[in-house]
Amino acid sequence: MDVRIYADNAATTKLDKAAFEAMTTWFLEEYGNASQPYAFARKPKKALADARATIAECIGALPEEIYFTSGGTESDNWVIKSSAFSAPDKRAMVTSAFEHHAVLHSCAAIERLGYPVAYMWPSDEGYITPEILEKYITDSTQLVSVMFANNEIGSVQPIRKLCETTHTHGALFHTDAVQAVGHIKIDVHELGVDFLSASAHKFNGPKGIGFLYIRKGVELPPYADGGAQENAHRAGTENVAAIVGMAAALKSNCDLLEQNQQHILSLERQLISRLDEIGVTYKRNGGDSRLPGLLSLSFPGKDGEAILHRTDLVGISISTGSACDSVNTEISHVLQAIRLDEDYAKGTIRISLGKNNTEEEVEQIAAALAKILLY
Ligand code: PLP
Image (cartoon, rainbow, N blue to C red; front, side, top):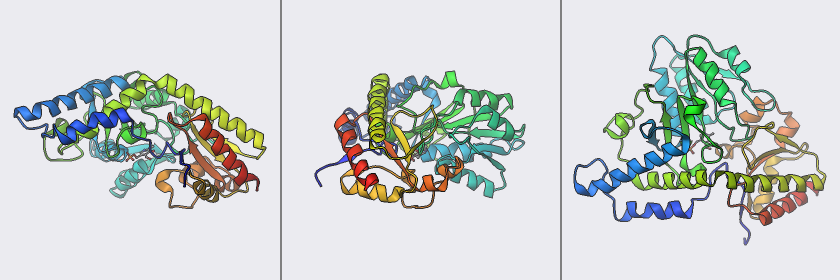
């Protein structure tokens, strides 16, 4: 197959070349264990400190508020499971019904241990508003967890307001910002969040590395016990190369944030206008406040799975829903949570454009969709 058009950037992204190049030294030459006291450990130790400072700067945090993890899944598990054990008098948790499974399955795990979890239903457009949160939060709520941007429909949540409501009730606020970090401007101190999860492979960094922001002064019990790494909160020898790659990728995305956004939004408009020209009936999910480039499109009477396979045959990678759900042909929990009509839900695809996509690729995607949808 000659053509390869990657339009599934919400599943993962291409590693930036500069990030890749920044990593090689730490595999091949400076491979010392950053925790050791000798001179050979000095450079890796400094690399970790520099990466932590770079990441902190990109999200408006302090370096000591950044904890390296293996990615979004681990960061989500850490916050939810450790929060459950942190306050014996406040055991309840509130989250939304359309979170990623890293959050939902962590919540299910603590429910099995007897901790109550309330699941908020979003609006039909895909938003959790402070008014919705007010209906679920109580004075025994310990943690509220609402994702920054939904990975299937792209709706960006009103995080600052949700945070304010949460704090009014004396609870802490976590956001799974895996889809948002490196793509939209985030300042954790301005938002007021207590915890934020991020994953490098979603912002052109390497896979298997991420971080958790923990607001200074907030005590979260450790996730992994062992050595003293990460302020004795997440034990295990640090993956210096991956951490350096993550920081380089995030810095590059944040430095070019507006430029990338403009490019991606222009591709998005191009695709939408081509779809309108085809004249096929469709609905775009996710309301008005969305992640740039993420298009959740529902074609009534069509089969999303079949569209995915037919685009795949011509070398185009898209998704039907969440990538983590691609073996599952059931209507996704996200589309169920926004109460999307079954006929539309079955005909839903997700196209997620990224900074590396081009106008020509968008033309090819539109042409492929026209063939598939009209015949
Ligand atoms: N949270 C969201 C919103 C995601 O989209 C994903 C990945 O699809 C994750 C968490 C899991 O992140 P990771 O792949 O780094 O474990």
